[in-house]
Amino acid sequence: MLSSPATYLHFSIFLISVPNLVVIAAMVVAFILAIALPFPRARGGKERLDL
Amino acid sequence: MSLTRQIRERVVRALPPERLLPDQQPAYVHSYVYLLGILTLVSFVLLVLSGTVLAAFGPQWWHGSATGRFFNSIHFWSVQVFFFCMVLHLWAQFFMGAWRDGRAMTWVTGAVTFVAAIGTAFTGYLSQQNFDSQWIAVQGKDAMNAVGLGGFFNLLNFGQMYGFHVFILPWLVALLVVVHVLQVRLRGVVKPYPPEERTPSPAGRRTAPKA
Image 1 (cartoon, rainbow over the protein chains, first blue to last red):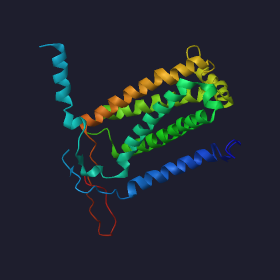
Image 2: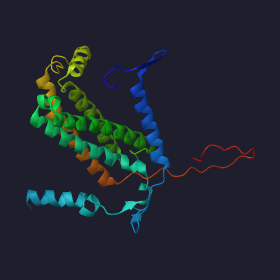
Image 3: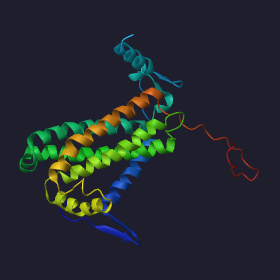
């Protein structure tokens, strides 16, 4: 499967392979998760607002 | 005063050790978004290490033996992670306005690193020594000729492309990364935008933020 040519999607002037589209979608999902997911706080960790 | 002492005092004054390797971070850094830069850096280190192994043994080894193919795959997937994280880091810093409060050079060095990394990846694809690299070289040479670079930068010349990929461009990227990280340490991580003050209108609609 990996060695076969990729399937392409074609809309008007836009042409993109399915693997590239999947990677872009994964990046958008990863970006949203990186913003939305709560970050675990270290026990006794130091943090300041004035740095 | 000696030149050595002058340089040392200047460096320590600009970047004292507690600033260079801080053990405290601002509270707003508690987000996965702030991990994207370090993930890019980690994948770059992995790229250099796996690339060094590939360079030591050569194309016949990385295509013809199981261990060679393993290191070839490590190198290939490292570059996927590298660009994946770098583009997300770029998005995050763009939406944060990371050039604010005197951080223009931090932004510029990051953007230039991105461009240099694209060149490094491109010459890497040309250095694979397979049909894929031949296809990319034959297609890409027309683009180089069209912009007038073909006479100097010959995509069909494996030796030149390999030299760019394993020496010239990685050093450039590494140098830019060092300058970029030092800029971050020098000025700190950019603060988030202040929350917008909005006054609700009688109809319940939100009005434009106050100037």
